[in-house]
Amino acid sequence: MKFFKKVLSLLLVCSLILAVTACSKSDPEKEIDTSGDTVIDKKDDDKQDDKKEPAPKSGEKRIINIGTWWVQYYDSSHGALEDDPTYSGTLAAQLKFDVVKKIEEKYNVEFYWQNLTYEGTRESINTSILAGAPDCDIYLVELSFGIPAALNGLATDLKTILPADSDLFTDQNVITYLDLGDGKANLLKRVEAASTIEATYPLAFNLQMLQDNNLEDPRELVKRGEWTWDKFMEYCKVLTQDTDGDGTTDQYGYSGFHQETFEQLLMSNGASVASTTTEALSSAATGEVLQMISDMYNVDKVCYPYDFTDNASDSMRFQYRDGSVGFWPSAAWIAAQNADYDYTGANGVTLEFDTVYVQWPVGPSGNANTNGGKVSAGEYYIIPAGVEDPELVYNVLYDMWNWYDGDASIRDDEETLYWWYAVTGKDEALQNANFDVMYDVGSREVFELWNNLGFFYDFNGLIDGTVTAAQFQETYKQQVQDALDAYFK
Image 1: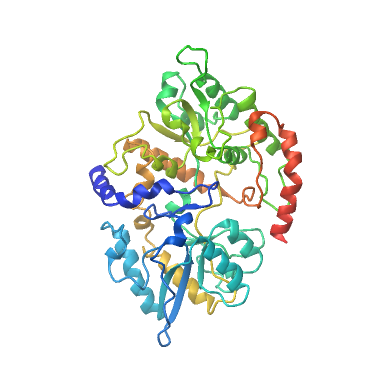
Image 2 (image 1 turned 45 degrees about the horizontal axis):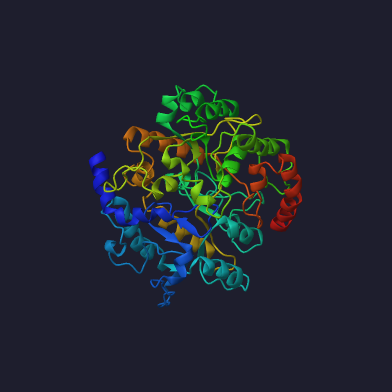
């Protein structure tokens, strides 16, 4: 198995190395294809010269265009598996290629991915659909602009189109939808393991550092229901040390970019900011989260000194790499960006310690059984309002996503998902364990708009101690409510 994986990874090296540009919620200019095979950078997408123009109609055959912002495979323009430069001989690639012809013959259609660029996709949605003549039959969307489009009637409600026994409303084996609380089904998402684990940020720890300090593996505490904020802080205090005796702290219990820290602590405490039409920033549970962050930096001082420059998103996310940090928020793309482990078979291991993923500790208002683990994110699609024959369009999308013909064991095969395993560790057992944690937290997805309301929160004051938790709540609670009013209006 490992030998096969190494061979496969060498064939994928070109595309996987590009994973250094993988996205985070804090950097909307970058995005990663959830298959782990194709990575794009929105900042450069206007420069791409391989953008395809909409295919002309031929006779009575229906042409279906899918608006996206990077080149995707496969569609009716491709005549060989090798048209995808990342093709590596996998069964999944063959089936995705074969399903194109099956769809063409079954529905008398041709379908094409249209690289509109990121801004071009947003513009097309906001202009052509509003004008009643959508440029595309399907659009890939980010929730930051997909949710407003859905709430403002620019997306087709599939509950008005499809029969009640459709997979979308029953088993959801192939497609699911994001429930916005309005009773509609218009933001569509593929059901697959990769979609579950994408955009997950489990808590990572330096295994050897914890072992050197005689701290029990947090995964064992999770099993016993003892992994709490209090226990986490005990660990962080132990790990925060002056290791060379020069009078200056040089090892810290925690480091992380503030957005992941805040978001994950929110979910671990059963709290929210903007998960309904009413703001919850001012709630007691969210106040506990803000106080926790303030105390970590200013009272217990267990956090690596925060970088308040514009480089914080990188510097704080990758500080763990020098071995001076016990815990940090991680993600597959973070581990891959600097090739922490030898996932390509060519780079060598670049970390001297093992990274282990664990669920975030449970806060005083949280519940391990009900806490969210992932804020809704990743690839969503809409069928625009006003499109011709939306049921046909949906069926094409369904069959395209069902390239495995209902056999989820092919779709979620470990070899197909190899990248998601390999980037997190050099040991296969640890890779499997880390994947399981990502899958667990990704399976507990929750709807939360706090980071998509169109304004920025100044966390610097909270982190440097010049703003209290209560002051933070008072400063932003009305802005959150006003933004929610505009969002759901």
